[in-house]
Image (cartoon, rainbow, N blue to C red; front, side):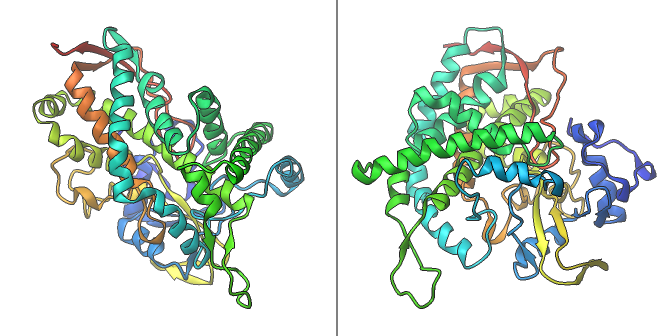
Length: 429
């Protein structure tokens, strides 16, 4: 759950184990202790530094000279003795090259400029009818039921169908699309075994081969879609002695599509599910939303702050330095913990409470900050707002069932419920 227990001195910040079962389910008491006692702390078991206070997280993400985003992928590092097997499996696909999330300037700037054309305000605005149509169809499918499993029946299919629409993926491949997304995040902040990691990489290879085929088809049969735009895009040449711009190579295009796939659905699924849980736990907020649908945007922002689907992200120190008096050696891996910053008492009063009317509502860091601010933020916000508007219009009540165990995905970087059982009653029609 989201409330922080009063654990006080029982928690040792340096002994933090993100893979402990109880900690995975509720890390917030640990983050509170870290903010108070050691806002920059070295976790020996992981050989990583956690940065948990709001001002320090901002300092790190804005200082792109000292803190690099070229951390080689958001998955947990592979032990040296297993890297050969991982490389063997990955060799069956295209190289996993850094583009947006895992790139620094100037490469990051070039890639982001290209892909941002797919997320202009006009493009996002034009997606609203599509999102509303998908939303109402999903609600129609369960409106006459007494209870639903929200993740499977709404939280997953809405964002998957939206990003599939953006990438021109046919309905017949939606199940594969979701599976490839799951494979892409399997190692992010998790402690799964090598065989599971290898199987997930095989799924990523399958994703790559599918989209490589689609991209090649557009060379001869161009369409009005993002894939054709990527194929026709030109970037500044890496060689300063060559004036001509170059096309993206296949590995670069696949990397960008994969990041759009993950960012476009996984975090939104988690946000939608958490918002419904929070509204069911706070029925007065649900009633206010029903009477005033314009509150949907406020609830989206508070849901992002309180639940923060992307709990944190890696950075690599580019030089020896100090952060809040802690010595950080060159090459050290840090985690900027957005989820902790979003509950910093210095900025957010009563930070564990669900309060869509709070001060500093939009100052949360759920989408990061600086040059790596989430490119899909506007799309996620739009999906969240439309979902809340339609759910509150069509449903009279939502209640959590006693069967709920509130189990979270076993990652300390991506946080979201694995299922949510909800009793519903339809509104008068």
